[in-house]
Amino acid sequence: MERRCVLNSWSKEEVRAVIRYKWARGVSGTEIHNRLVEVYGPGVMSKQMVRRWCRTFSGGRQQVEDIPRAERTSTATTDANVGKVDDMIRVNRRITIDEVAEELEISHERAQNIIHDILRYRKVSA
Image (cartoon, rainbow, N blue to C red):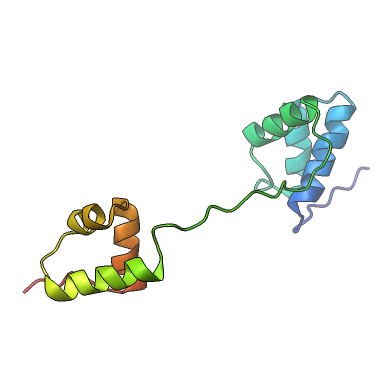
């Protein structure tokens, strides 16, 4: 009688190592996914992601750890821009996000982030 146990915790690296091992043994991505679900539960990893990792290992990747990426530097959300936005709003309370973005030559999303998330300004209806 075979006894199965579902593991409640795992690391990404552990799951990737299992995928790499099974892939090296010639097991299909779908079958690897089925085995992972049996052992780790349904939330372990999607079938598409398992197949992607199989392709990645087929392409020559050896490590199962995340590859460090260079972080993007924040060029729009600077203290200077935050100060300028604050000044612009204090001078003209009816200024729009698009006007702020255009004036500072930053994206709409960055302007909105500065106004709402950093300065904590909210639109108030009368």
